[in-house]
Structures are given as structure tokens and as C-alpha cells.
Length: 256
Image 1 (cartoon, rainbow, N blue to C red):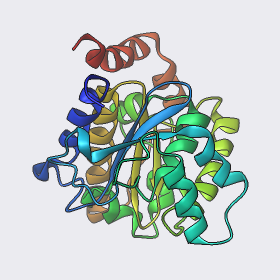
Image 2: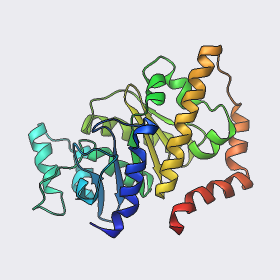
Image 3: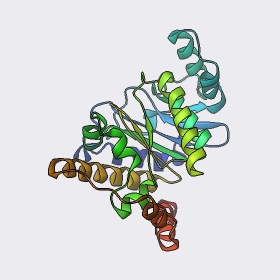
């Protein structure tokens, strides 16, 4: 677990930078698709800002996906299945409690990187009755370009497998409606998930989502927030020049 993880390590540290206020202490988790059969995910209890290669666990995909289709009858059984899915059985670290939704999203959405954080700015909104308005609407162009035409919104669920199961339902509904996977998933009373093909894309999406939350919060304090019309959102998202610009943001980390 060395070179292939460099980009994941750097991305995780960047998301965990205390000045960004995305996570504190052991919050948040990240993952990287390694190949068709496995992925690396942050180990339970690891802090993101100073993580190294030893802070990740490589896991086989299929056993974790099986948990969603056939939930175990007890948490001890779930833990045993999760531990047995580790590539290195001699390792002592356990995968994040959220390993099931990482496996599900990598599989269902076809992305390579996932970044899950709990930004204060995001949770200021997700812990209110305005969560749906923030998730389903867009208010300025670059929010559309980087975060997509809307976000998938997931109601609060117990972290771990219960959350992964309901998240899969919401992600599949989003894909059915939009014709593509979401860039942002918002979890009520919990946090956000960014999905992308490069580490840079995850960082860019997260930063823009946090900016959008700050704008939304400020708009609420000033009065009733306005929103972009649906037709303008689709126009912005599908504009050739914006597609080109979005691709440049994705490609950035591939050259490093």
C-alpha cells in the first residue's frame, strides 16, 4: 500500500486540514477504487489531517456489497464479514464503519474516489428544515458546474449498513431521474459525500459545496434565498464550454 495510495493520502490530508473545518478528530472517511475487485478505505478511528498509508485498509468489494443485499442478523456477524473481506488478514486495523456505503457508491456510481466529510457550513443547513431546499436547488453557476444539477438527499439513518441501504435507494432514484450519478450526496443531520474520478475533483466538489452552503446560510439570514430556474441549471450544466472547464478540473490531478 504505497504508490497507488499517494493521491488518496494527499486528498484525505487536504480534506482533513483543520483550517478548512470539514472534519475534526476522527470524523470523515475516504476511499479509492484499486481495481475491479478491491478498494482502499480509511481505517476506523484514523484522523484525516495526518493520515499515512497505515491509516487505510484494502478490502474486497463483493463481500461488502453482499451485506446490503443480505444484511446480517447481528452487528457481530457484520463485523466478522467485514474483517474477513480485508485483503491483508494479518493487519490489525478495521475498515471505517462506513465501508458499506463506500463499496456501494464505488459500484453503483462507477467513480474512483470518494470523500466523506462533516463540514460545519454544510451541517448548519443539513440540521435544519431547509436541507431539501439546499440539496435540490442551485443558486449560482459554478455550483451547477462542479456539484451537478442537484444533490442526492438522504434522510438520517444509523451510520454504517442502515445508512448504506437507504443511500443506495436514493442514489438509484437520482440516477433514474438525472441519467447519471450524483456529484454530491447530502446526509441530513450528518454531512456530505463527494464522488469523482480524481482526487482533485473530490477536493473541488467539496470546496464548492461548502461555499454553496455558506451562501445559502447567508441568504437565509438576509431574507428568502432565490434559486436558479431549472432550465437555466440544465443549460449551464450542458454548455460545451462548461463541460470543457469541468473536465479540466477533473484532469488536473492526472497530470501530477
